[in-house]
Structures are given as C-alpha cells and as structure tokens.
Length: 345
Image (cartoon, rainbow, N blue to C red; front, side, top):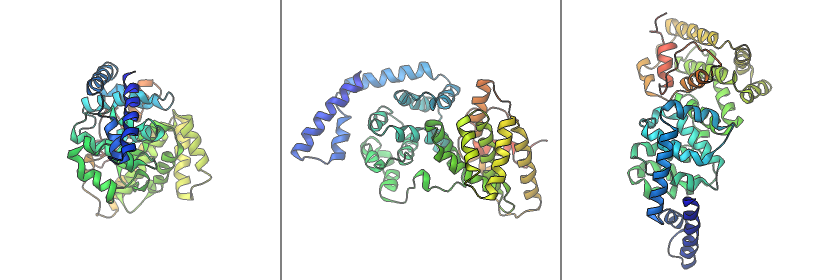
C-alpha cells in the first residue's frame, strides 16, 4: 500500500537526518510526512473517494462509531474524519464532543500508528483542526505533546491553541471537570472508540448531580449522564457489567442513581428516567435558586450523546426512546427541548 512505502522512506530519511544532527527528532518526524507528495496526494484522493462512498450521511458516521469497539478498524478512521469534515459534523468544535472523544480514543489505542493515522486526516480546514488538536491532547498517550508537535507546521492557523496545550494550561480529558455537556460527550466518544471502563466510570461519577437540589446546571448534567448510561447500557452488556461492578465502589448518592440506571436498562424502561428528570428540573426551577444560566445558552454545547444513543438504537431497531432521534443535534438542545421548562406537555 502507498502509505506503507511512505512510512518506510520517511524512516530512512529520519535516520539520515538524525545521523548528521541537522534537525531535532520532532522536525525529522514531521519531514517524513512530506515525502513523495504525488503519491501522498494520490493516497489522500483514494481515501477521500472511499470515505465518500462509505459515509454518505451523518447516520453512516454514527453507525460506524457505534459498531467500532466491536470491530476495530483504525485504518478506516482517517476516511471517517474526512467524511465528518465534508458533512459539517466538525464545523462547530464545541458541538463535536462525541467525535473529539472518539478520535482521541482511536489515537490512544494506536500509539505506533498514530502519526500515520493523523497525517492521513489532512488536509483539514483550520476550524476543524481544533477538534484534532483536542483529540491528540485527549488521547491519553504519554507522549501526546511530542505527537502534537509533529503537526504544528500543518496547522499554522492554530498555533495559539497548540501553544496552549504544549506550554499553557490546556487540559487533558481526564483533567476536565464533568460539569460540562461537551466533556460528557467526549467521554462517550472515547468509550465508543475503546470500550474501556475508564470513561464510563467518569460518566458514572456525574450521577451524584442527578438529585442535586441547588444547582440546575448540575442537575441537568447528572440527568444527562443518567439517561445516556441507561440508554446505552440497555444494548451494551459491557457497560451494564461496569454499572453493576461500580455498585461496589461508589458512594451511596451515586449508588442510588446507578441502581435506577441498571433497573431501567434491564427492563428497557428508559422513558421513566426522563420523566423523573423532568419533575426534578421543574421542581428546582419553580422553587429553587435563580442563579442558573439562561436555558437558551445551553443550546451552544456538545454533540449529542443523547441523539447518538437514540440514532443507533433506532437503526438497530432495539429500543424506543421518549425523544425524537435527531442526528447532529446538540446534547444541550435535547435538554432544552425535552428536559427544559418550556417544553409542551
């Protein structure tokens, strides 16, 4: 395959450059991806064509993401990312949490292939590069900064953001607080890529807010975590097993919510969790503090884990949920429409 030959040639050049001490290792690695531009362009064109045939709609992207952890094919992910760009799925990075987390998970599980996989995702418009930069930082690789440095020259418009992650206060996924829909989404994306328990455990930790009586934002985040855990665990034994194991490791507040998640997943009664969340949110808005954000602002956050679970379930014909399956809608938009106070009953 063409990209294998490129890697071999690049390695030879890298050895020669290091031997004469002309540039740093990071620069040498970057140079390895500039070789044979004609063949690289041909390979990129072939990748684009295959992606266009395989991923016609965003539904196709979501199906691939849902199935990936059962049949991991990282070589197809660069084409998937190109399709995300073409379909506009990454046009607003703040609404691309699921996709960011998914790309991060694939990069993290393929450390040796990561430079090659990332190189094949280019060219990429500057706005969408934000997603890729965060995905590299969120990958969990011990050398993620060195990996990001290799692609600085490919993303000149994003030097400020890259500098924030390399030298500033840019946080990795594990360092981010869970009180943000984007972070919940990113953890779901990571789980869909890896099937690992770590992102699931962090989502479970947000259940502590599902009965918060003082902060409507945290109550909504906790309700989102609860609904998405139940809806995904209903069709994912690995996730259901994780929930049961965590019953022995979480505090009583989380265990109460987790018990309801497990029961709803096993009985396929996801709708009642939504109804319970609606009652709690309405009650807090009616008699609680007034320091919550304007609900309309919530529509500016994360790609939907809610919609993702709903879309996949409808595709598989397994679960009927209580909200419409809207591809590409925001997680918080779903909350506004179906957990928000202005909804029509």
